[in-house]
Length: 270
Image (cartoon, rainbow, N blue to C red; front, side, top):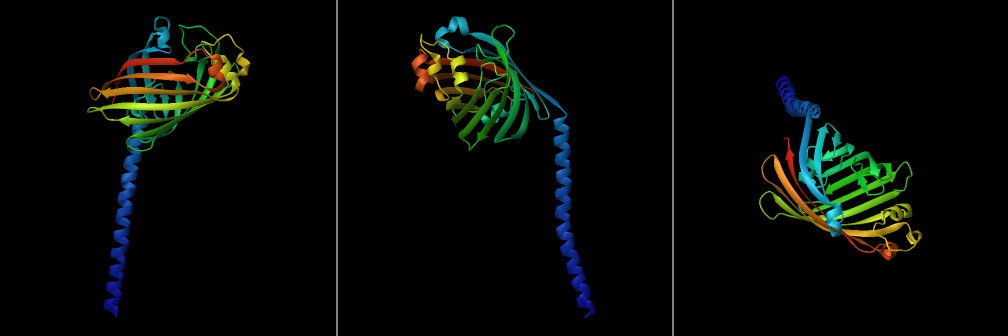
């Protein structure tokens, strides 16, 4: 009986040790991972590049601009394209000189909050080379990778100074098709909902007609094609072309669809 009790105690001790060892190993690995994440969050990463872009290719001579691409990343804070992780994983190709805070930054999901100076006259972020009426715009951005091919994106903006930009909500869906090694061809389509104030101030190339006919709602759809390729570990290039078509009341006052495009080259510090 005594031997049986000793055997039972020994068996119980083995079970406890077998349960505690994985927990200890997991705790150690978690602490190592947390330490590596902390170390990574303390580092500054960057992206540099240049791009040629036009917001209206029908008026190329007056709208073509060469602009630098600058991205900085420190922890959850990001300027512009940051270190390029979202660009590589989620298909983002544009670059905005916006300081944002990444609420969530996973390989398949990115959610960011930002605030920027916005030019109501041109629809661009603050640019020292262009005049116009500026305001302060807040923005919530979401990029979701559904699977290897499909991606969902959305953003919400708000003019907090009430200078004419109003409120917008953009929803889009894209399909990424791998063409060559380390390259993707991305087909994307989206639609924009906005307040009447936004549409009336952003109706470029409007006909001679009353803009007060444009109401709040979905007034624009867009579709585009983007090609991006990683040249090496640090270098990549992309090109994109998109067409924006007014619908509903906006179609009655805007003279034509607007085509835009850009091409750029990027360097990532990894």
